[in-house]
Amino acid sequence: MSVPAIVSDRVLAAATAAQEKLAEHIVALEVGERLGIADVFLIASGGSERQVEAIAEEIEDALRLQYAELPLRREGRGLGHWVLLDYGDIVVHVQHEEDRAFYALDRLWSDSPRLDLPGVEQSTPPAEPKVEAGQAEEDSNA
Image (cartoon, rainbow, N blue to C red; front, side, top):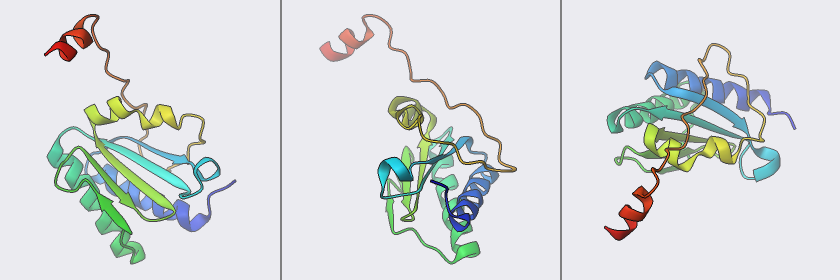
């Protein structure tokens, strides 16, 4: 299944907006065949709570100004760890680096094709944090 051009254009606009706020590890995954409720997941990371919020706001502004589109739903605003913007066919996940590594959406959807994002720097997302032997035991006993 191929993503419609208008969806690709909007995803690219959102990814470009994220990059303007220095988001890292920007990835667009075609999830439509597996998920059915959205065509694309756009995932981006920020290094601080403030940056996560700024990236999400920039994406919202870009899609509102360029396509007169507002998200159907927003989750996580004001918390700075994981902001979700649901545009129906596009779901944007802006995550703090640590949350992105922990929840590993990229790994969960790794068999989904990547959507090309011309002009947007794409890189491999961070690996899941490693737990030292005995640390998990200490954490559970605390």
